[in-house]
Length: 205
Length: 205
Image (cartoon, rainbow over all chains, first blue to last red; front, side, top):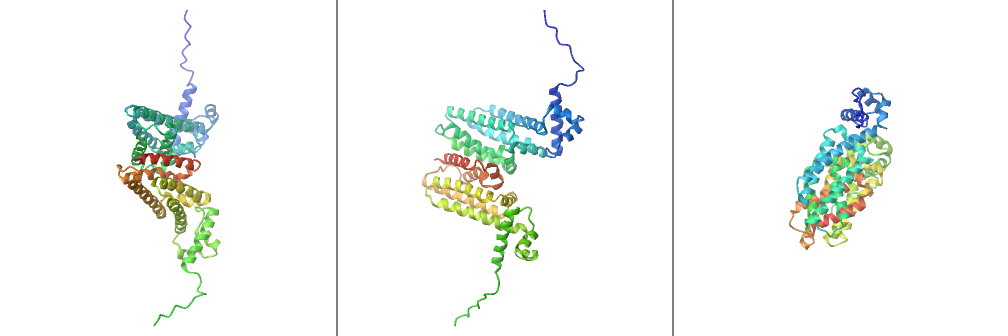
């Protein structure tokens, strides 16, 4: 005997997940146009045609919506980086791709929509959990690449791995942290190429 | 026959140089208390007891006064750095001292007087000529240390000197540029130690 399948619910309305996505999409568009700082939950509610109370059923605060937008953007950067790194095999080349793609997709995602930079700035200043997770993933990928390079003999093995990871993370940070990247945007591409070469010289066995 | 010496002028009043210094001193104090951005030349004039027109005889604008204050501070940092570097002989040790002193005296001078940071921020964002000169001196000292290290065999000689100077300058910049240093203050001391070690590894022959 098979369990009866649940009846189709064509008219039950959107799921919670769908409403959340709808709010996030509308908020992304609204913040892009008017900026994150200046927008209130009331503004958003009016724009979507929901009541403020209904939005609060799904998100505790404006920041909670901003967090999701920010996490989405960071996940997109992360995906681009992973893809770029997977395309090449040597640790040296992986590191160059990593740094280059991180900065290129970071600048594009945060700064093409100048108004969305608001969110990135607030997120990086606090920092929000999504930003801490993002930095953790950067540190992890860096550590993986270094470990690989040490195994293949491309990189030196004398310096403690933690120290190397941390120092390189510090070299890269001004170019992936949005608060600092805003001062380095013009020269970011050339700068990161030169910095990558310096880092690789520091790693030579 | 000797030229008659000019008559003493005990009552001729302060020289232009003295008046300028008096205005700069008063402005430094005033900006420290109320911030650079919010202060007008009228505020300053009232505080010193001069007419606004009299101040304009000596300085074209508020920025011209800010420029002198900024240049004074940068000269103090520069003096501290030169002194620290002169105390040691190896290029390796000179580089460590250079970076450490630059960051320590920079943080102290810009951030101990939180309100004066205003000036540093405006100066670094434009940037003002004094800031360009400051960066030029940093680049020059870096180049001198690298040249010495290459001559003594402490540092590698394969990479073009210009490229090495520029890449190291970029590593250091987030820690001496006030706009970026504000985000790195807490960790500046530890970070610069680790970054100096990374740079020195990249320089090893």
